[in-house]
Image (cartoon, rainbow, N blue to C red):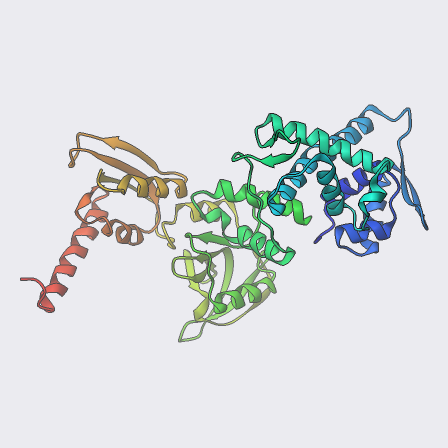
Length: 424
């Protein structure tokens, strides 16, 4: 497994509670080297009484009779988790993967085959003390799963999954890590990001990776697509080499090769355009700049010039306010939409992406039945482009500037149609 997370340490602790384990046995079970196991056990030894590794015996966990209430509580918590949640998950995986029904003996053997890297013949398991521990874990887990209606017991005393059982997807470690990386970068940009966040947490738990609730990447993602062109990837790699969080950047920009000292506030990936932008302060001007990384000729750290604005509250708030990519002044918009077709669904999807937006029904406006959408946005032109998709089913109440933009755009479209002879 990747990483040296607390999850693996908890599982090792549960293993040792079942009896002594060699470092080689643990290393093979968790897919790591013995040095990683020694580090994990070293950390556990700060809290628990674990004797050193002995050839042929391994590590041994001793639980003192008079151990503190806290230690007892922690040990019970780990043991309960090992005997319930983990056991239930593994039993569901076995039954789903094998696509069959099993009695208790077959389930116990399959259960142990997954957990133990050493192969045991069925004959060797009979009367084995450690086997009974695993069998009891299986019995307890089956009881919980039957009570929940996830597994049912047949008349032949065999067990099978019901329609309520969750579906497990088998992934290689590389596949799982790739999905985890994509969720880190793109998960927050989706309207159902809360569900993706749960998947991300579970993948991080399984892979021993650290899950960070906030600021998981040094760039903000806007939009809902997950592909990045190779040039964007190269620029993300190039930026990762620069300490722009603490120092300003010296940038040669545009066709004229303008040299600017730039304090970076945000790195923004706009997925709808598949483009990467830098937003911040040009020391030679008193307003915010947006730089397209594709127009940067050269970039380096401007040593000695501190950067104190990277992902500051103002710029993080700006990311929430931009409709796409804009540093224009904040404007309040109020727009009426006709209740027609799937417009309501589209507006609800938009609402989930816009933190400060509101949506409510309207029966006394321009349309007999409709919705009112209100929001504080940066980028009226970007918002106008979005509204044009709705044609005559939209009416701008405010501001006047947005209404004029919509009318001007319509007139320009009609002019182009006339020029092409498509409209008289």
